[in-house]
View 1 (spheres, rainbow, N blue to C red):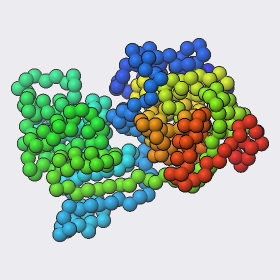
View 2 (view 1 turned 180 degrees about the vertical axis):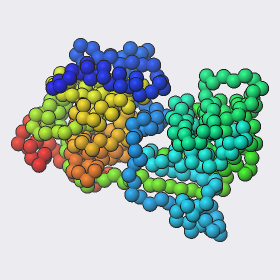
View 3 (view 1 turned 120 degrees about the horizontal axis):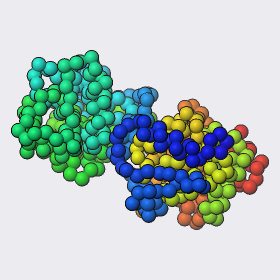
Length: 448
């Protein structure tokens, strides 16, 4: 490597991860061998060649760890009032909403949903009353702790405010009553504290928040537990539900939990391919794809690049091969702890590594201004082997952001992958040109 070795880079990534947080989703570790390849020390090592599975809770936690500021979104807020005869029907701003009202809110990660519901809870707490008045459900232990940190930060000038965590491992004596004003926890534990152990009197709750609804319904049992908790609450309790996405399943769940809601939607910034030059390279096998990649690097200047692979095994192999060629490489793998992934992304943002090799699942929501090239080492397909057009757009859209022109290169190594590429091309109605990576003059032209 040009400045520091692959092994040293991974050591620094792990060290940075340990200092980020004491949260642990998994206990796997990664260590480099002498060649820079990642060696898995967990029991699931033999599954390394499987396609990455999406873990929405882990992805949500990762987004919270890596975001240092809010997303800059220029789209309009869409407010859907519940009753056309209501004076709220023509409202155009949050101030005019005159909360508290029951609310369903949807917007992408990083737009301030947590701050919104924390403010709603803080505004309703009466510190003189020493019992739980606000209840917040999170899908996982780790996400509950992250939300708790926000409550503590925003409530630091409210010294009388007390917060309790209804999460695994927080054991209380049977018959004890909680005196904290806000309780945040996971559905199973909160349900026990309300129904079985009687730590919380649900009839005294004034604000009920269900956060990360899309993650919640993806976790077995959480949906039913959340509905059971909601049914214990008084009729005048303010109900707030927040979600990053709004599929039909989330909407059906939201309607069960939040009666008579106002609905606020913030559309996601639309990604476009207009500023991105797209090419494909014909290869016969994995080694030829790697050689094409080396030829690209040899002919043009690439500030930073993201390279997407279909499996962990391919990603690990490619990262090791690139490091042997002297590139500063970062590797994102689904078996890494969330805190390790956050540290890797932060190092890549800071430019300590110039190449990020990743599977699709790990790289959702990563915005790095210096990324000038995105390479699909493997084309994105869904679980049935059909083109995943949305993922393709998200992947290569990273290089056309921040008002800059981007470059996307797709590696094609079979008739099947050529068919996938043709279908992607038809879907977006955008021509993807062939690139001969053995012709240095041709490669240099695409960089201009």
